[in-house]
Figure 1 (spheres, one colour):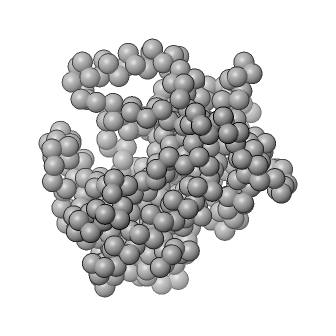
Figure 2: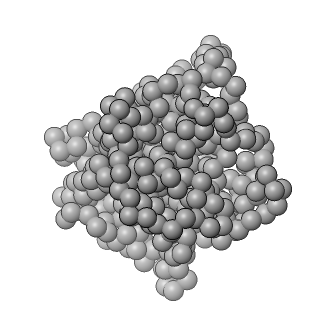
Amino acid sequence: MSAAPSKSHSRPPLSARKNRLFTLGIEEEFQIIDPETRELRSHVEQIMEDGKTLLRERVKTEMHQSVVEVGTDICPDVACARVAVTKLRSDLWRLARNRNLTIAASGTHPFSHWIDQKITKGERYEGIVEDMQQVARANLIFGLHVHVGIPDRAVAIQVMNMARYFLPHIFALSTNSPFWLGRNTGFKSYRVKVFERFPRTGIPDVFESLAEYNDYLDLLVKTKCIDNAKKIWWDIRLHPFFDTIEFRVCDIPMRVDETIALAALMQALVSKLHKLLKQNLSWRNYRRRLLDENRWRASRHGLDGKLIDFGKQEEVDTRLLILELLEFVDQEIDEFGSRKEIATIHEILKNGTGADRQLAVWKNTHDLKAVVDHIVAETTFGLKK
């Protein structure tokens, strides 16, 4: 079981914040919704036009015009990240409202069809569609990306290797996409099943060194598999342009509190693994083929299934393994002053994820529009309106 919450609210040492070690950057991808029909609307260009002054470079288009992404600046701590994410969501909601639209945070839309959505104009997106055809057009999904700062990339690759083991645990906490094209898929996260059609997705292999990693990227560029390293879409990666480890496995959560809680957990985990390395210790690196078993289970069952404890070679309830993870990073939680944020993880473990809440509404109403209404209400919960 995890350690009892304490009252510590210490912050990372100033030296760590100055060199951008364990800083946070958070990106959220939202659905643009018609409040009357509850369908997706391809209106990102109008929101972008209205938001040029308010959001500047913090708002971005995605491949489909019914998707809008916002991203924070570099945040020195979780408290800063909470303020930034709340403001971005609030500003985005107001921009959408001014166009008689709203936003929704779910990994997939419960019933809108990808075939009805317009592709964003531009060389980048047109190139992806030309390369991947229907796989790209059907990739109508919405995720959460969290960057944790590690300026030393040689160290970061080793931390990334170790963090791979915990991706299914973190992913299970974020599951928020049970519906696809009007059907209950039976998955807690169908988003990752859609994204798996893309190349270079999922949990990456182990890289023995930064040189091996760079050689791999150079080979893909040389052989024209990719034109730049941003087309590596793994669940976790060294960002090609920022000195960060980027967690990409999560569905976008409904509430701000859930996003911040997951970011706090990722930050604490990176710090813990970094600390182990500095002590000449490490977490055992498992093969991708083993970790993929847990990833599948998290996608299918969310928190309600079992993951494999590969050390014990046995199944363990997912909730219990997540509690073990929280205990593993307990000291770091206090060091970052994120005890309040981690309390939200305990609430998710008790009350379920976004997928569980969507399914509960569906069970009670058998109305997917009611599910959309619930997602919208949760997305805007706690915002400054």
